Image 1 (tube, rainbow, N blue to C red):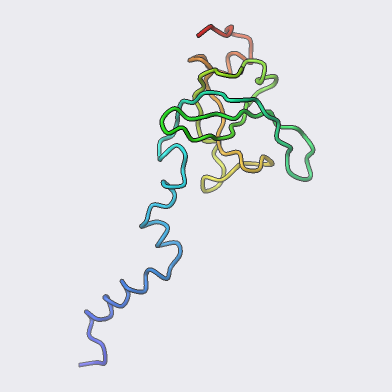
Image 2 (image 1 turned 180 degrees about the vertical axis):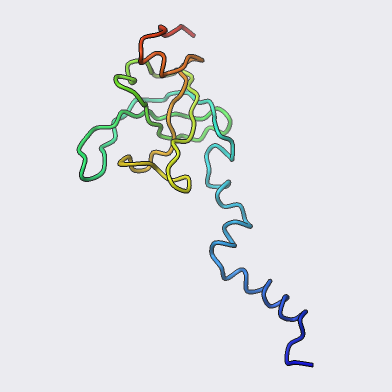
Length: 140
């Protein structure tokens, strides 16, 4: 019989797994706890205000964004308004549907620091069609 039997090795392995940061994050579901959408792909929210965020170096653009309070858990998030002049179709107190932008590992994308979500619908109308002029914004 060796110094450690097979059973002790596996028990040791289970104990030392907690030293691995990646394993601990996966097992304790940190990615869901820190996620304002709570694991879902889309969520509805109310626009609190429109803001402009400065793009990261080397770009110097002002990205059009909005501060949105989610309906499901009242968490505020900053969302990107995609499309040319899209900010004209989004007003305060509008109901918007947001989704993830799709950066690496759930992070922000491109030169927009800290912005992980974008608007896809305003008052149940697609923002893309509003921007292209195919439909007009309805009343709520």
